Length: 335
Image (tube, rainbow, N blue to C red):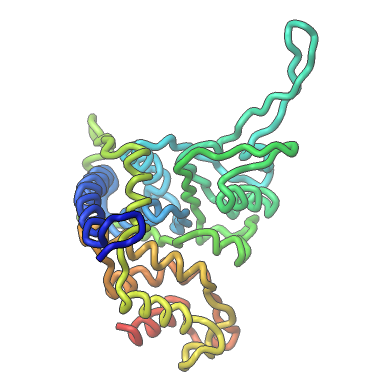
């Protein structure tokens, strides 16, 4: 069977398979390198890696002290990315993130403006406690995440490639915070819950982090390797059953859909959620060394992709319903 350009479909498929085999080795090495430094957070590491391979951004939600900052530092080292961190505070201004223009005078007395880039000009940016900054500052970052460039004084400045944001949010201390609006939450491909490690993992943490020697992250990929993997993720074929599972799941999570769960939902995920779930399922398959995603991948990734894109009605919340409970019942319908 021939296709445009003179290459056969079989040749294209062979090329994808060979590229997937080579890339999967790099990706698995990266996951192992991250796991050698971050203990007891295997699911978080995998979901963060899926997010980056999908070309997206993630919102990490967890109490302080669960290695969220260390995760970003480790991921930057392992993936060969320029990583930076910004601590969000109520007085943080958009220019503190994006950059600003300063007036300079050259030796001849001529004055001109020079752009000084902000920390957003990194390949991997940690926005620590993003909900502590004002809505204006949040919007400046989230616009950069969406458009991949910033505009200062009417001049466009492109962000580096690749560009990913891992933002953190503390679920406990809500005093003095500015919760992200629904439209801005939708910019994040996943919301990743960071839970406490189990007993054995915490034992490893005690020995590894309080001794004379601490395990250091080792590079396993380069930025070019990562971008090649991201391009490959978009070429991985997806079966019709997986596409139907994505459509059924996302569409059933909206008000007005068929089923009892739809009556509990105040607003639900839009088409961007379907796109995110498709990319995430492909990336998960690549991490596992498979050449096509499965319905199980869709089910496994449904909660982190959907939960920040949904809200329950007041009556549902009063009855004790939660978004994870509703998503779990929706997953059963396609499982």
